[in-house]
Image 1 (cartoon, rainbow, N blue to C red):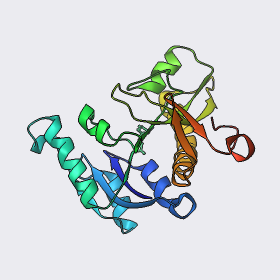
Image 2: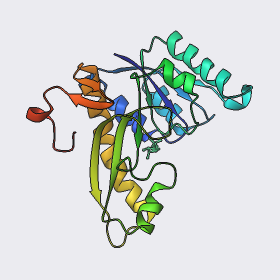
Image 3: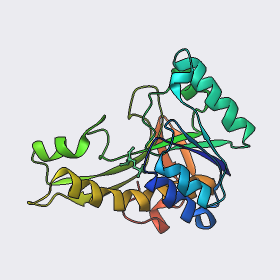
Amino acid sequence: MKVAVLISGRGSNLQALIDAQIKTGAEIVLVISSVEGAQGLERAAKAGIPTIVINHKDFDGRQPFDAAMTDAIEAGGADFVCLAGFMRILSDDFIAHWRNRLINIHPSLLPAYKGLNVQQRVLDAGEAQAGCTVHFVRPEMDTGPIIAQAKVPVMADDDAGSLAERILEQEHVIYPEALRLIAEGRVRIENERVLIDGAATDAPDNFA
Ligand code: GRF
């Protein structure tokens, strides 16, 4: 499977996917950043992966921006797309074009805590646990069939930063794992729910 990864910043999840390429069987053939100078671009370059910056400001609206991304992804030879800290909202056309070939990682136990500033909201609500989710992308933000989730405890002395770090560690585990399951052809979607072949026997507890 040939994958394009879309980023806007640090790219630590991109790094996890790069490091796991042999294990996942998902080769990263292109990294697109919506932000010039994003740290993830350096990570890609270091790994010898082609990069492009596509800045929404150079386009007249979301649709031409997304069309340019689809063109770049296809020209780069990718047939699957991973969002990894990509901070632009995607058009319905883009999401439809890549339906079931487009996944995202989000730092909460979806469907709880969609959107931004998740860790602070989790702390403010007094939750005892937090986590992360890998899911197929659907037009409504942070929705779509869930492939994998991991839980972490919320500690009494956590601030948003320490909680984010604990969640991020798990993100770096479940994102490559989810991609591996997809690359192995073990993930099916039925009635908008994910079914994983062999999940009951050999998947870790964290996996749905
Ligand atoms: C991660 O917390 C991810 O869940 C969210 O954005 C953050 C990206 O971090 N979608 P990084 O750029 O992968 O380090």
